[in-house]
Image (cartoon, rainbow, N blue to C red):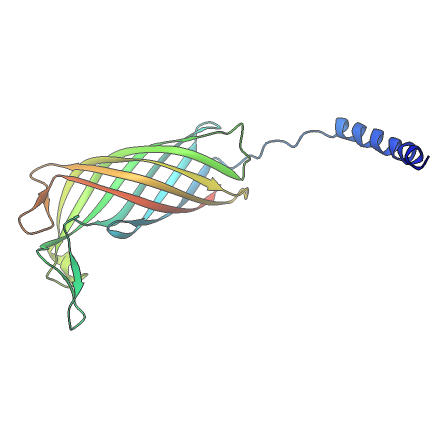
Length: 212
């Protein structure tokens, strides 16, 4: 009898809840502003780097972007140690090598229909000119830029990453990119007597931006 009485008491509540669920409209999809301006904090094999970017949404899944960054490129053969006086010594190193790529490309969002807006994975690809700068390693870091030399190459990157959160103003993301660049005119000399025409590297990038 107690079970029957409980069912009788709960039945109106269940019917009301069902009708309320039928009446309540589904939550509309989250919309983000189409423009984003921000910074890239880069961690790679050669150390840290810094970049900036602008993105423009072309559709729900496709975004056009342009970006630039500045980072150091190191040779796999470099062996670094600190001497008795605290100086950083790299045997056989002649020049520091920096790159300043200016790329444009596209970002494509993945799994939009199956994942919530809180997690927005994507793949990305970009290409463009890469300005490569060398400075003498035997000179002080900043003072060596007075003797800098520059070359231009062609390169690009491919990557995969994701943006997080549903804040319509602030962008937070994380991605991994593989960079490749080809230089002409004999390449650049990082290690003594070793000229590199192809520069490569993998970077883990933290993305911070403002959407508007």
